[in-house]
Image 1 (cartoon, rainbow, N blue to C red):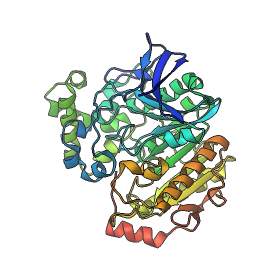
Image 2 (spheres, one colour):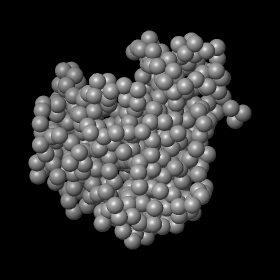
Image 3 (cartoon, helix red, strand yellow):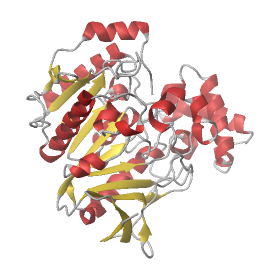
Length: 446
């Protein structure tokens, strides 16, 4: 392994020289105890070894066989990989162009329903962005009961409660702002990109005053608008009974004793409460109105910020008809209130190898060109679509506009989205097909 070294405001760091780009893995950006807000890393002693990935948050596959508890996405994204799990998981990875100066930056936030996922899964790799002159950062953050406990008894002196994982994401933005210049990035051109829960995170973050001036643009894949329009954030008080169930399941008397139990006990006490709360468990495990980063006043359909935005969905995306409606309403509102423009895409390439179609998160394989880590028999057209997506996302990061020579002109708005497919072009929504997929429940959810 050939290494590369540089100096950052935190100290010296050693990464991997990948030939046409440099890769820095497992950089600690913050520290945090359980249900405490993150503290930014300002310095480290000696030379930081950034040649291996850091731990991801504990999640179900940290205690059970992933191939059994999540077989679909295990096969698509994680076969043959090993991961380290810990509550101490605030690490990020940097993919940097060679000899870059003031390059645009994309921070990617992974999906997984706020309960699973990792920044180093097989489908996530920032190499193609680095090769195209964009610094790509991928982050881990606390998940599930470790990152989104919202028992109101935890409310601090500022009146803030919950969303620890969201504050981790915010901390990563601050760390990038303070350090990315050393990697060749422009600290004043930071864009956030996320898929599913990562897109929902991005949507929550960009509406907060806490990110004002930090984020230049946002790319949200399969998730923007869900909590603005449907699963609106609850107050911590509305989650009290859910967390009291977890306390009882763990065999402790209060939230403070629960704070001290081991990771496995906490996880399965939380999982049993989820199972016993169905179908309300989803909204009970989402981000809440924490009193500072997320409030009713700063997060609603009237608070979409005046920054350039890309929204995307796939044709077999979760509940496709609902995803289309949410996306169209979001784009209409954003373009009405914004001078920067909201651009929409509809991913329509039916992936080769089976009849699952363009399932939820399928477009990530194209957005990162990570076909080599997947079992499917991809064809030349798949690589072409990947090149189109990556080049347009890179153009967006540079200019706030996704137009590039690889695709036809991309108009603002949600009525004529860019259709990424065998013949990529602006095209009307395939509403009938999305409704059909919704009714038959074909496709997968993540």
